[in-house]
Amino acid sequence: MPKSLEEINERIRDGSVHVVTADEMTHIVGELGLESAAQEVDVVTTGTFGAMCSSGVWMNFGHSDPPIKLSKVWLNDVEAYAGVAAVDAFIGATQLSETRGIEYGGAHVIEDLVAHREVHLKAVGYATDCYPRRSVETTINIGDLNEATMLNPRNAYQRYNVATNSADRVFYTYMGTLLPRFGNATYSGSGTLSPIYNDPDYETIGVGTKIFLCGAEGYVVGHGTQHDPVNNFGTLMVTGDLKAMSTDYLRAAILHKYGTSLYVGIGVPIPVLNAGIARKTAISDADIRTTVLDYGVGRRSRPELMTVSYEELKSGIIDLNGKEVRTSSMSSFFKAKEIATELAEWIRKGTFELALPTMRLPNQAVLKPMKQLSKAPLVREVMLPSITVHEEISIQEAAKIIVGKQVNHLPVVSADKKLIGIVTAYDISKAVALNKGDSLKGIMTKRVITAKPDEPIDLAARRLERHNISALPVIDQANTVVGIITSEDLSKLLACR
Image (cartoon, rainbow, N blue to C red; front, side, top):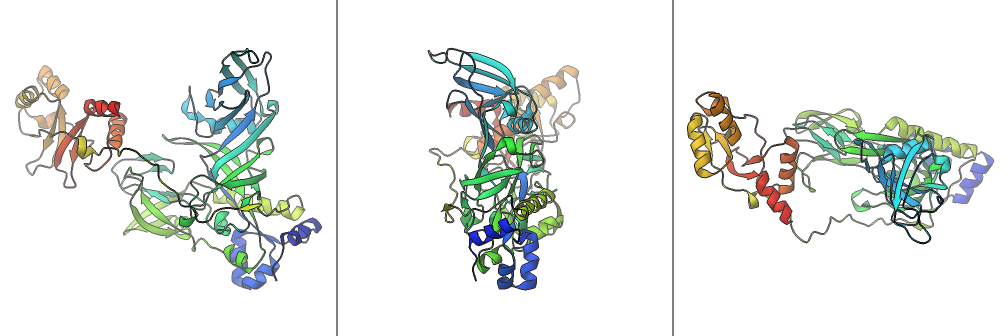
């Protein structure tokens, strides 16, 4: 017979409730069957602990004397958004420090507050009759704040794609450092402990559902941003009192050469009201599949390479078209299990009762890309014809070409027209000044940074900036030079946009 939520809460109050974690439920259903498991188990607890960039905190600082209406505010040199009421502000986890850059951000400010550390506050405003003060500078801790309310627009992703990299260089991403030529694969999410995977139809998770949030009680506000349940990428918007949270389940993180993020711990209790819910909470890592994407292709629509299960990912190695690729998780299964276990203990002790949602979350929404009024130009649309030379020609001949054709870069090609190097006007002039060598072979740069014809120019511009170079030969799949783009040409084009 189905159970009601009130029956389960009554068992919580009298101490007879039977609570298990989601990974335990998988085995219980396997042993007892759905009907018996549904009768025996009252609540299944879930957990996840990973980098959740779409997180932040609303704060109220109280009024100064004389009062100020904040227009800009910085906490430890991290800017918070102050375009609301006079002394309210929102600090986002990924906002970077204006002095320390990528080494410190909003996530660190949030952790510092939870750890009861002093935080430097600096603010400016525009003077009015009721808010005459123009600036203020002080130190605060979490106890000084009237309110500190965590409100995270997008948390607890149902699952994540797996990231790998086919390119010849390292990529630094929100999925961590991706080694070249499929050197590794990274993933996130807690698999069988995933809150949404244990209630994929949102029967018990919805607006008003009470949850575990960073060691405190929290609530689901609604579906999160980029909510895409049709493709098993559901998300939650959550809130809770930052003052009650613990650094055991909330930690700042630096993703190397990418930025800051906040590791957030979330646990959602699933009341087992019937056999249907029992079946869904019995999901295993082998049942949960996700897609391996090639992040070496810098486009929104990254190539899909294969699908894998979380069981395969957790083994540490996946077979990617015959190549053994090591896997590593961006989230912590240990902490996810700890969260599910602690939440279960709260329920057993009677300190945490369950609440059904006041409104169910949508289960048919699909994520849409940004609407763009103009298409970003591709490299082939803006590249110029390139004059190529062979490595055997003399430096003097190369100098005459550069002067005569008024170019600054000469890609060097082999006899079969494959790119093997590049020389610049500076290389030539330096070689002439130093009387260095007779041919280009000894002065050309052999490791050439290139572009592909069908990639957006924004990626090419980023490559020029990253490597501090002034031109990119454009090559096709056969490594044949088909054109060239220069920083000067791109600067003019991007300025026009």
